[in-house]
Length: 71
Image 1 (cartoon, rainbow, N blue to C red):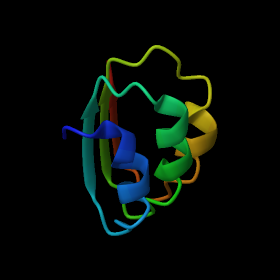
Image 2: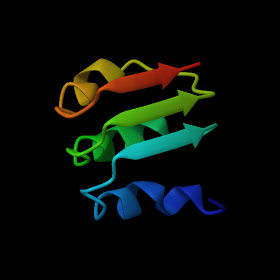
Image 3: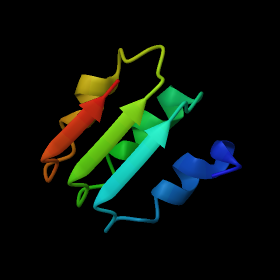
Image 4: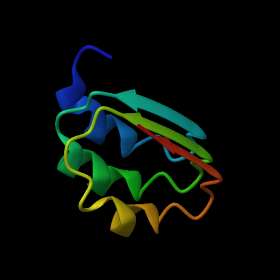
């Protein structure tokens, strides 16, 4: 995805997304706010993040999450 600035806004409209694979996303705080809207998300792969302070709070909203892979 070439325009990662728009990713959080796009994710807000994809409520039936089941797999999300993101690497090296620089706007982590914006992304975490949007993750709470992905209630159908089953698998989340995240790589290349510097700050994961807010992640546990936002992950608690992902009630369908079965697999989380972070590196």
